[in-house]
Length: 98
Image 1 (cartoon, one colour):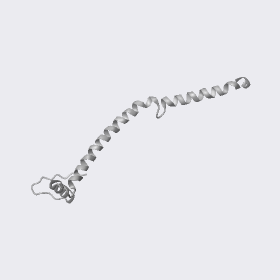
Image 2 (cartoon, helix red, strand yellow):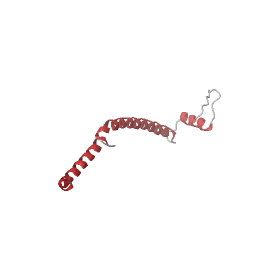
Image 3 (cartoon, one colour):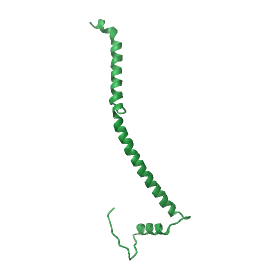
C-alpha cells in the first residue's frame, strides 16, 4: 500500500507547504487580513506624531525665549516663580498636587 502512494509523497508535501504558507500569508501577524489593524495603528501613530511635533515646537519656542539673545522677561518671571515657589502678593495661588 505504501509503495503505491510513494510517488505522490513529494506532491503531497509540496501541497502541504503551499497551504501552510498561504494560510499564514492571509492570517499571520503581517498577513493580508490584518491590513485594517495596521491602518488603524498607522492613523493612531500619525496623530501621536502630530501631537509630539506640536509639543516639540512649543518647547523649542519657549527655549528660544529663554536664550540670552532674546530673553522674555515674562517667561523668565513665570519660570522663576514656578521653580522657587514665590508669588506676587496680588496673585491668587491655587496649589495642586502633581
